[in-house]
Length: 140
Image (cartoon, rainbow, N blue to C red; front, top):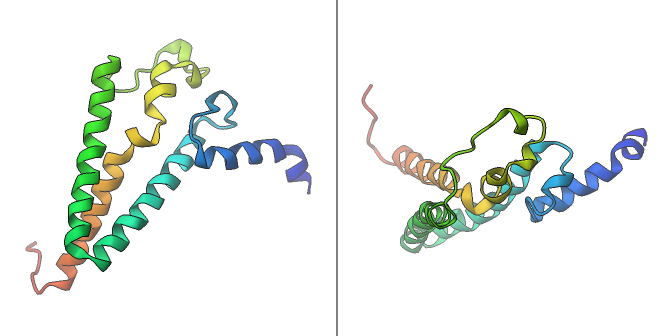
């Protein structure tokens, strides 16, 4: 009960951010909590992809490669058009308040900018699963 009394407002903010990441980036209680929102959204997308690959393998593989290609193309185009830095540049003044960094607010925490490594992991998981099902052995 004391926990909710002391931290109830922060808990509610973090719940809202799961579905709308970085909308209220200035009110985040911990700056790394943006990752929960991005990871939740990518997990929901990957559940649909994995189900599609299981139910309709050909369509699922095509869909995975389309999503993977989009997850590479979207950050590239946004970075190119917006003339953003290619990575998060940390300066001394921003160490105190990371949410003041424009790249962090507008690019780094966005789900559509974080999809490539997640979907590469889904692809790798699929390849490992297929390798385990086959008779092939990985040489040492």
